[in-house]
Image 1 (cartoon, protein in one colour):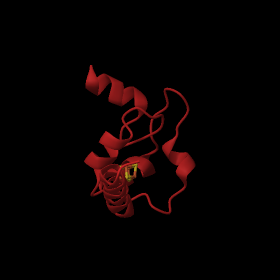
Image 2 (spheres, rainbow, N blue to C red):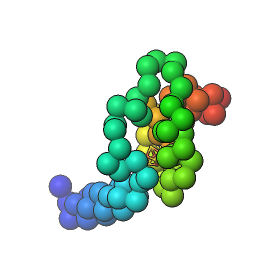
Image 3 (tube, protein in one colour):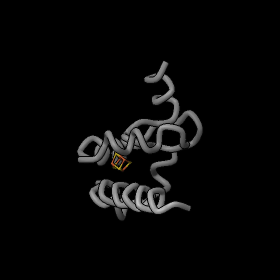
Image 4 (cartoon, rainbow, N blue to C red):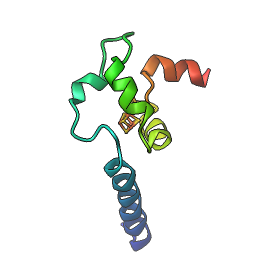
Length: 82
Ligand code: SF4
């Protein structure tokens, strides 16, 4: 691996850590962010995500993953992209 890619990888990880460290859900029950297929986020999850300072970063990061990212379920994100 070239030095360029090593540095780019390190910066990428640093950027991820930066926004994740500021996530409002840090320390919360992670299962709550993975409602059953087709389920909606609980009011508690919605309240936390609504006030999260890194919501846009989270939405972009988790766009292809299951669960709630950026305050949106997988289904809601698919609708948003359509
Ligand atoms: S928007 Fe993302 S980072 Fe913020 S609380 Fe919700 S799931 Fe956590």
